Amino acid sequence: MKNRRLLAFAAAGVALAVTLTGCGGGSGAGNGDEQITLRFAWWGSDELNAIKAEQIKLFEKANPNIKVEGEPSEYNGYYDKLATQVAGGGAPDALQITYDALPLYKSKNAIADITGDIDQSKFQAGSLDAGIIDGKLYALPTGVGSRGIIVNPAVFEKAGVAIPDDTSWTWDDYIEIAKEISDKAGDGTYGSSAISNDQSLMAFARQNGEDLYTADGKFGVSEATAEKFFEFSKDLQDSGGSPDASTAAEDASASLEQSLMGQGKVGMTFAPLNFIGIYAGAAGQELKILNVPGDSAGKVGLVIQPTVQYAVYSKSKYPKEAAKLIDFLLNSEQAGPLNKLTLGIPADPTVLEAITPDLTDSENEQVAFIDRLSKAGGTPQNPIALPTSQLGPIITKLLDDVTFDKTTPADAAKELVSQVETALAAS
Image (cartoon, rainbow, N blue to C red):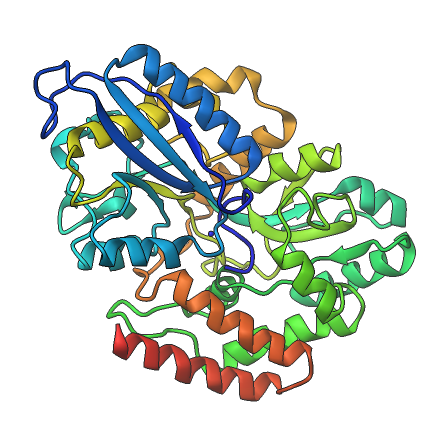
C-alpha cells in the first residue's frame, strides 16, 4: 500500500465475518469434523471486499468445518495494527502483505514457511520469487503488476491536448503537458496528480543508473538524483500542472474512487496498473496506460513486481488450513477468476486464461503493458532493504516540506539520504 496505496482502501474498522468450510488436516483439525476458525486480514476497496465475500462463500461450499473471520481495513494503519498483533502473539492466521514488508516480518519469525503446502509448478516462471527467502516459500503473489502513467483520454480531449508519444517524452514534457491541461480544461481539473512516492523515486533513480537500494542493502539513491526528484515534484506543482500542496494532500488521503482520477478530474497519475479498473469504474470513462517519461535503452525506470502477497502467520494454530485458504482465493478455478485484475495479473496461467475473454479494454492494456515491460528488459531491481511502510512516510514528509516551501529540494535530498541511512542502520 504509503501516499498512494498499493491497493485501494476500504473504510477503516470494517468487520466482515463469513463462515467458511474446509476439511481438517492441519494442526488441531485432523479429524475432519472439528469446527475451526481462521482470521484473515487484508486492506482493499469496497469492490475487493465484495469479491472476497463471494470467494469466501465458494470456499464455504467446498470446505465444511472452517469458519473464517475477515478483517478488512484501510491500508493506512494496517501495518501499525499488524505490528501490535505480532508483538502480542495474536496476528491473523492469514494476512495480506506487501512484498517489501515480507522480509521484515520473516526476520521477526512472524511468517510461516508454506513451501510444502503449495504446488509451485503451476505458477509463471519467476512470479513466486518475491515470496521466496533463503530457498523457502513464505508468500503467494495476488498477481503481478507494475506502475505506469494512467491517463484519462476524455480529460485530454476536453483540454484539446494530444496524448503524448510515450516512447520519447521526457519529464519536462510531462510538466508542460500537465500545465496545458490544467490551463485549458477548467472546472477544477488538473493535468496530473502529485507524483510523490517511493516508486516514482525509484523510476528516477533507475533512469539515472541507480536503484532504491544497492545489492548489499544500502540506500542507492544519490543526493543529486533525490534533488532532481524533489525539484520535479515542486516544478509540477508550481506550474499548476498538479494541485496545490493542500489539495494534493487531500487527494493522497482519499479513496481511489474519491480521488481526483476517480472523479475524472485529472489527466494523468503515476499509479499501480491494477488501479486502472477502479479509476475507470468510478469515473465512468475508459483509461489508458503510458510508460513513464525519460526511459531510454538500458535505463528502464519501471519494474515488474507482485501487486501484494498473501502469507500465513507463523503462530497460527492451523497453518495448513490458512495456506489452503490463500491458495484457494487466488488460484482455484472457482475463486481465482473472480479477482479478474483487481489484484494484478494472475500468476497462475490457467486463471489468466479463464478471465482473458471477459477483460475490458483497460484490463487488456494492463496485460499488454506488462508484456511490454518484460520485453524492455530493464536491469533487475535490487532487493528491498527498508519496507515501504518506513520509506514512504520519510518521502511524504520531506516532499510536503518542499511543496509547502518549508525546505528546498537540495536540503530535502540531503535529509532523505540521512534519514534512510539511519533507518537502515536501525533495522
